[in-house]
Amino acid sequence: MALKNLEHVEVCQIVNYWEINQKVEKNVNPVYKASIKVQTKDQQPTQPYTEMAYIKFIDPWKIYAECVSAIVGRALGLPIPQPMIGLLKTGVTPPPGLPENSGIETPVFVSIDMKHPSVRNLITNHSTAIQDNKLGKQYAAKLRKWSKLLEAGSFDEFIANNDRQFGNLLYEKDNSFFLIDHELAIPKNLVQDEKNQANHLYTLYTDNEIGKKLAIKKTPAICKPYQSFTAAEVKSKTLCTEYISDIKHIDQSLIALYNRAQQLTSILLEYTAQAKDGQLSLSYHETTT
Ligand SMILES: Nc1ncnc2c1ncn2[C@@H]1O[C@H](COP(=O)(O)OP(=O)(O)OP(=O)(O)O)[C@@H](O)[C@H]1O
Ligand SMILES: [Mg+2]
Image (cartoon, rainbow, N blue to C red; front, side, top):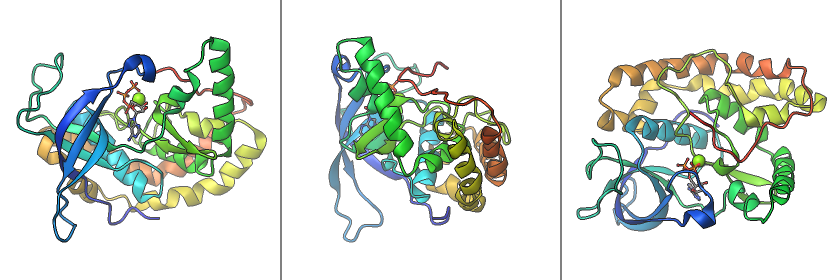
């Protein structure tokens, strides 16, 4: 896999949307599902098609972070739902209570519905905290068996994602997962060579001696494709200049990502130098920002 020929983020129309019942889903923020209409440029003939998706009314920088993370991760072969930028169809209005400057013209982030529950949904549906806790440990054990755990942890380090809690992992089946929710990744003030504050997946892999040895062996090859990261391509494929006016910050963040890509192996190997064994940092609580 390489970071060349990244996919183009599609633009779609939000035909209608509805809020998901919070009591059932146990999410922190309101979660919306939508019916979307997509008119792809690549398809011949250009027939619009309808899909189901999750949508988020978030600020443009977070849409940018979601889109960069998704197209980069997908190009590297990681299981991440297809991202899109949604525009509300005429007559469809945003939910009340959004920041003043958001209106019907404001783009929303769209993530194609993978039809799998989040791990948080699976482990918090039980009557007692003890049961939830036990299940949390079981899903952490499944994560350890996930064939893409080290790749996913390396990716989180690259995009500086400190929010990989159980709500942001979908469980597919047989110890395999999808990565979602990268709105807190790629902060505006991204530092190119600083280790993440909380890389839960890479930490999970390297919290024992065998994991550490394997990580030392495998990390350089995992990080190699990141070296072909090109800022110009990411900038054009995410359409970010169409919805973010703050071009200076976009350019700064892409330069930081490029430099981060060149140093990724050495940043990650710092985790293998840590002495602490048997730590489990994953939780199903939201990261506070
Ligand atoms: N593409 C998707 N396919 C399936 N389920 C999804 C998808 N995107 C989001 N979800 C569901 O919606 C929930 C919330 O999505 P997400 O984490 O992106 O939003 P959020 O605003 O950060 O919510 P929270 O604060 O609850 O984490 C997820 O935990 C998951 O259950
Ligand atoms: Mg989330």
